[in-house]
Amino acid sequence: MTEKILVTGGAGYIGSHTAIKLIEAGYQIVIADDLSNASPRAIDAIAEITGTKPEFVEINLTDNAAVGQLFSEHTFAAVIHFAGFKAVGESVQLPLKYYRNNLDSTINLLQAMEAHGVKDFVFSSSATVYGVPSEIPLKETSNIGAVNPYGKTKEMIESICFDLASSDASWNISLLRYFNPVGAHPSGKIGEDPTGIPNNLVPFVMQVAVGRRDSVQIFGGDWDTSDGTGVRDYIHVEDLAEGHLKALEHLKPGCSAYNLGTGQGYSVLEVVAAASKASGVEIPHEIVARRSGDIATSLADPTLANAALDWKAEKNLLEMMQDSWRWQSSNPNGFS
Ligand code: UD1
Image 1 (cartoon, rainbow, N blue to C red):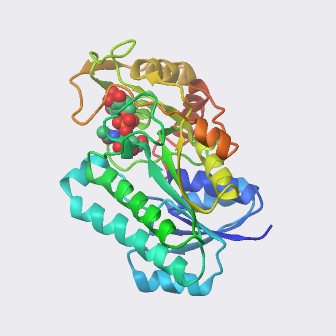
Image 2: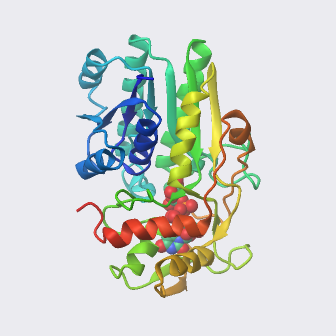
């Protein structure tokens, strides 16, 4: 098997873990990343872990000429598209930045694929497309309605993909709606490396555990959940990466969306407790006001992905925290 797979955003958190799975499965990959929110050290770590240095192209996908050149220089069998801006708060402040970047880059990519007859596409979508959940657990058929510009770019790209597949039956597209990715490669050599103050719970908790920050602020203790704190479907990034491999192998004509989650919810307090257990560090935390835009519970019904992709998330919360901790404690300042 020597098919070349283009992995955009392959130096980022989920992209780098997927790159490893692809190389381990025997695929030849090309990573395209502009390194705007990723480190070249992730590429070195992929090489260290797999023993194979992936081909790397530093490219901004909003540069249409550069994307054209990339496709003239390589023959791709498929594209897995991770590259994109992903900070919810920033997207509310700078919506045009998000619409311009996430939409332009994806349209450039899809046009280049069309021009070169590459019709296999796996897209990094998000459970954020469901907005305020219309039902729990969320099914792929649940109402869509992203509530911030970041989420709307995911929703718009999904629409573009559905339209494209209806216009031309030769496209094979999978949209992967991730729930809450956490954890890291068990080697501790790659993991999530947010710039600045982490917005997401687990990177924040880990920075408190390692001593970079004082205390975790828990956004609300009065939600309608078992212990009053928010409940999410956390999924190990290794399981998620495996999901991409399965999605690639099970691509079928048309455009299909799949929930990638475990179907099991954990509260913020349960996450903090598991992180304390994994790290052996007492993690100070306090309940503060709710964060605007948050919801009580987000939970996947992953049965469609389980059946159609022959995939199931395997790792539990403690394993997620153990791997996050191994990465954080061996790299207290991330890749820098
Ligand atoms: C967030 C994004 C979502 C994105 C996802 C990517 C928002 C509103 N949503 O989801 O669009 O797809 O990240 O992973 O930003 N929490 C705390 N203290 C913290 C941080 C978080 O209590 O310092 C709580 C939150 O209120 C929530 C849970 O932890 O209940 C998880 O939060 P987070 O990791 O930010 O993920 P989401 O909000 O689910």
